[in-house]
Image 1: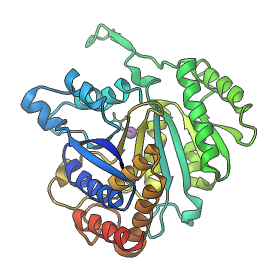
Image 2 (image 1 turned 60 degrees about the vertical axis):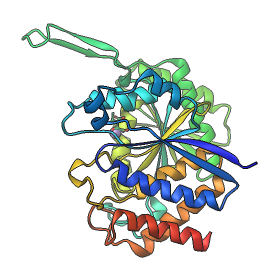
Image 3 (image 1 turned 180 degrees about the horizontal axis):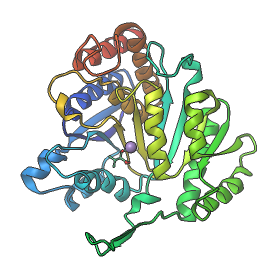
Image 4 (image 1 turned 30 degrees about the vertical axis):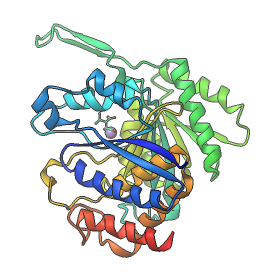
Length: 356
Ligand code: IPM
Ligand code: MN
């Protein structure tokens, strides 16, 4: 009997459904050539669903999702829904509910892709950011007093637990070892100012590092990392950091690898249910136009298969992406590819069919 993975598909808002369709197309193609099946189950979550039904993410939906092997997400975000409602109610809710404590963001400049960094080649931009995904400034801890008055006070607290920090750091060391490149893990923090939170991070990092003598444990402040990511991206192999810093530096990283058409990530619970997404957002003004680059979604599908343990099928997806970026599409940006969204998916599919 072939193994069957149950994949929850949340196409979501805006251009999410268009790019997810290409990801699913590519996934079906590699599954056909592999010793596993993929069964896709659609979940109509997102802004339109919320406006029509009032549901963000019900208990029933969460129970149903809990039975899946992975979640493949398009984009969440709707121009007619107040900022924060869908993000908190769906995306962050899923991350927290399923304890997806790692946000994994591979950053790789592929051949044929434009980087705004002068004189940098694909060999110079190839690192991975491991972002803590359930704590820090994202927990919602804090509050306000006297809102709307001149005496208003707002407090938003960064929560860092030994357990949460340690499991993230351990994941990063393991990942760095498995990746087997420069074998260097850089902790991105701010120990010179955030002397409670990053004291915990740094002590935990040094302690865990003792168990990984083969990995070079390195530290840099987040502001310096931002500078070096532009000046010397080749210095990085794996970076580990907290939720907020990770959010910021991964957008910077997305730009140097070619932009939102390329950037993909995984929200990972190594012991549970993980969720994979292109990080570009819902791009409402492009909805239905078939101009968005589906490669970020296709790469998210690749990270999904890697996480599920299907390394060979994942490598076929990457080979397809490499080929199409190098030889076929003119530009990764929306509307400039020289092909439609679905044509780019077709190019990847036909390469995999004929060459893998
Ligand atoms: C990301 C996004 C989210 C975040 C938003 C949409 C809540 O920016 O995945 O990086 O801040 O984590
Ligand atoms: Mn972000």
